Length: 128
Image (cartoon, rainbow, N blue to C red; front, side):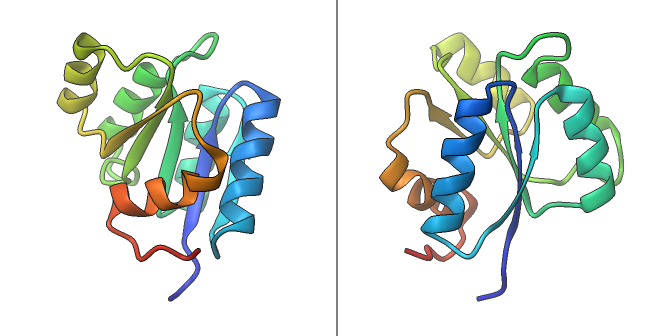
């Protein structure tokens, strides 16, 4: 299996560290990180990752605003996005569906199964 590239966009350094550690330790994924929406948008356009893990609640440009920007741009509109969020209420689920989100992983998540969850949502072969 070739190495998949995931862009992780989350404003919390601890979450970025835990998620990256899990994805690298339990898979062959390459992980790029961004701590804000604008930085994530820039990296997505430059690096063209295979998928994006996106935090919902971030200061300034939140996950939904960033997702709308990604969907407007031809170079990023087809990138699979998984929301990482503590907000998994029915109204939020509808919003995610309208924006063509591939899936939602609720916070807090189980670090040992994160890679499997990501692979299952994206239809990728699990690496662990």
